[in-house]
Amino acid sequence: MDLILASQSATRRRILNSARISAQFMSPQIDEENITKSLIAEQALPRDIADTLAEHKALKISRKNPDSWVIGCDQILVFEGEIFGKPASPEALKTSLSRLSGKTHRLITANVIYKDSKPQWRHISISHMSMRFMSAAEIDAYIEAYWEDVKHSAGGYHFEKTPDLFADVRGNWFDIMGLSIGPIISFLNQTNTTAPFQTPKLAAVLGHPIAQSKSPLMHGHWLKKHQISGDYFAIDIPPARFSETVRMLFDLGFSGFNVTIPHKEQALAFADDATPRAQRIGASNTLIKKDNGNITADNTDGYGFMTNLISQSTTWQPSAGPSLVLGAGGAARAILVALLDAGAPKIYLCNRTRARAEDLAAEISDLIEVIEWQDKEDILPKVFTVVNSTSLGMIGKPALDFDLTHVNPRALVADLIYAPLETQLLKGARARGCEVVGGIGMLLHQGVPGFEAWFGTRPVVDQELETLVLT
Image (cartoon, rainbow, N blue to C red; front, side, top):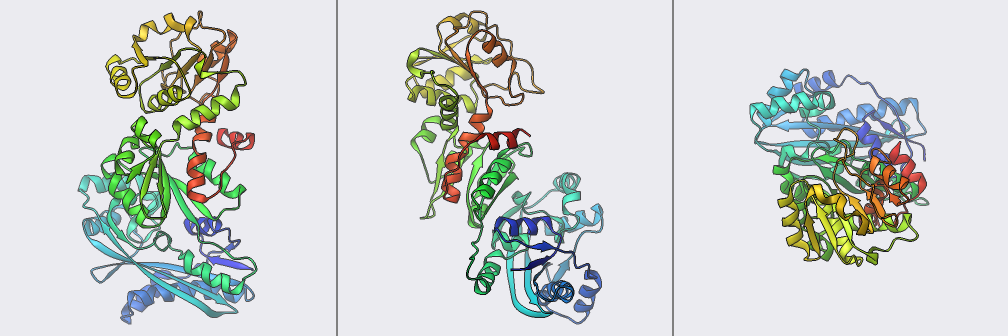
């Protein structure tokens, strides 16, 4: 099927790609502003304005490509009977957001399909968007951060990047993004039954900040490799907006989420139920929507850690002797539980703030003994596993001051850091005959259970994926 999308929108292009629909992308370059003014003067209804603009786009491209199916798209934002267009300047955006703050508007999405310069199909959807109240300072901060992203959007917001701007949304994710992919797929399947398309499934990683996440690369690779109709991306959500934003995203059609700092404990509290390992760890990095609508919290950090160690080592046995874990943050929780479940007879826990380590040990097991930070080298001769779960040694962070002179040469030394790929800790341990394992494998393996739950296929961690993520 020869298909053309009459739009240069990166979001709409990605929606088609996520649905595994091959298409060309062309900009129709119509005079939207004057067409809209003319229709308003004729007192046309907002839905008819959106539909007419979509038709103009599809018709212009169809005339030049008569044998192709051409999709035309347009969106109209309506508030208190007024159509809100693309903001002409940051000042105009400030005025627009000030009016929308705390109010509900309608977002009308029109899609049409043309062939041989004739309309073949059309669809109009209406989403009701309730924006939360924003102070003047919040609006100024938003404009400073997102102006370049939103200046070409009706109403001046980018829902995909900042869903937390909204207190409530009634609609469908793809409608809000501007391409009603479900109805479009239904139409295309009627005309191309030999290769049926499927509506993409959605998942994302949630954090604050989140721009540095490698998860979209990883999951995007698996989706492409297995030719799965789906999409995965990163969404930045402030902690104060976590629960209501996640609930809204589930309502809009998401299958689940990865969750990272600082939301892991909130994610566990948000869910309807939790796996035993998430309950023991006291935090969740994976949320899954079940067929019955319930949300399950899981924690795959420990799974990723252990799978990485087992896949990298042929001799390591966690039950061989005591372990030493540096750090008492969220990652340490998962590591401690994973080591104990794997048979570690004792764990020495060491953190720069001793009180935090003591609280963590008290929560998890009496097999964990807290030691002073300055005493960590003293027990190296008798431990068989050493794990750094702190950020010390990471690029841009302070170095990890750790003298390995007396390390047990039969010990396995692991560092959760993967930037750099081989830390000074690993270099020093390798020089003393220890087996070493870096952190990139844990990142990759922890994503496997979530991907399988959301997209129905269990992916494989291989060298191709590791190379991609490290590029």
